[in-house]
Length: 143
Image (cartoon, rainbow, N blue to C red; front, side, top):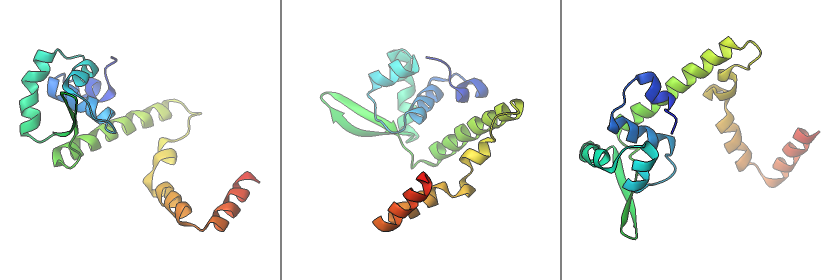
């Protein structure tokens, strides 16, 4: 597994941080401890040493049981996790901006991902439009 930008730039290789990074990168899914050990390239022994601290800080949460395996995911309600996710996003955005500034022909990252562009609002508005209005909108886009 290639080291993530988050881990590489922070320069910290703690097992806890590797687990959190793995779960942040794969936040849509839940994983067994074995899956997490494989995904983070940690031995099971190392993972099991870090696990009690992850649970004590409520950074992870159990989601379900599949057979005998308990599944876990990142606890996105935890304020520490929220801040770590913001930091991960900021690091990614910083290096994307840096990449764009070093490549004069590249489009500005903020032009693509800037929340003030209202992309989410436009999508919600589009979904809430009547079918006739959506058809008209699609005709305009295709023209």
